[in-house]
Amino acid sequence: MSGESIAPSPDPASEPPLAGLRVVDMTIWMAGPVTGMLLADLGADVVKVESTNGDPTRSHTAPTAGSVTTKTSISYSTFNRNKRSIALDLSSSADRGTFDRMIEQADVFITNMSPTTVTKLAIDADSLHAANPRLVYARGSGLGPTGPRANDLTQDMTGMAYAGMLFALSPDQEQPFAPPGALNDVITGTYLFSGVLAALLRRARTGRGETVTGSLLQSALWTQMGLVGSVANTKGASTTGRPRTDPRNALLNQYRAGDGRWIAVAAVNARAWDAFVTGAQIEHLVADPRFATYADMLDHSREMRVELDRHFATQPADHWLERLREHGVWCGPVNRLGDVLTDEQVAANHYLTTLSDGLRTVSMPFTLDGFEPSAAAGPDLDADRDAVLRDWGVDSSPRP
Image 1 (cartoon, one colour):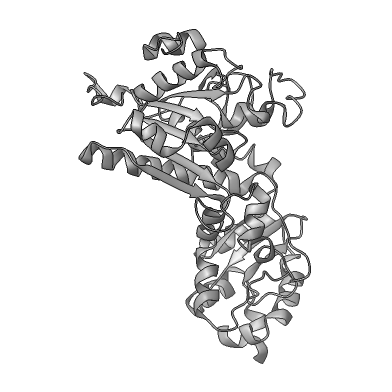
Image 2: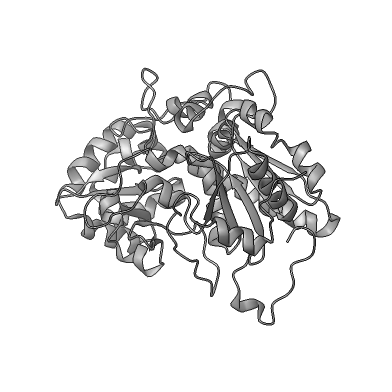
């Protein structure tokens, strides 16, 4: 609880890592909810405060089809798992009083509302810190909390577009490429979660909360750290990908094997050259002056790609993967997502989970020894009002 230290459990190892932590999650769509989801996965009591209309993600996509049925969308249930829900109209004096009392009890507040909405609802950091100085206030935004574009409305893909990612992912400079799956939303929410943990650790030393910010732009830049470093510090560095048929390094590429499956190989320096030659059984190609050494091969990478296309097509994928692994070469199958869902390596590490409503989704992005997170589906709108008010000791009557 925010006003006091979390009491130690008689058996700390038996409790989730964040048991006793109270979080008010006033987020919508996907980036912000991911932050609260991860805190909830670790055992925090995360209460999703929604408008009386609910998070728009509830109806963003079609409900689950097939053998699993839910009252809401796949996106909502996935990104709001393990949370509780209460619907509040902050223009109502009664609901505003409830909200204010919850803030007084909270350890963390999360929002990714627009600056206009934050101001309108009086849920800015200064206002909430005045009510609870120990509160960790986490704010997600599109392009950052300050600057000329701070008020721009920004979404997953448009944030990546602003950060240069869509051209960085494109095989040419003619057309941008946008990856599917709310990639930047998930990354941004995860990074903001990390910031919340850091702020909680510092609060344990100082006794005071603070503001943590993250944005879609900031996350997209961080994700491109390697490329940003090259472009910022190397004159003429390329900012775009290359098609498979025209690689800078033919040994850092993908090839179709004889059974139609694809494999990925990554021999990225001269030290890996000998192992690749032996593992891939291409000794006959080394006799060609164009490929006599690693440096020679790089100078003729396109030609080597043509030769390797022919060569890898002579045997099935498992043959090549077994040989390359045996010789210490980085390699792996190029899976489709449907393949990964039934992969034995994924299953062995419990990287997927099934929620209480039957939805299958990804588990946490890290594993804590001896801890298994809960898998409750995203809550129905306002389903937990009475329980939350009771558990948090909140009086729902209007404030005088």
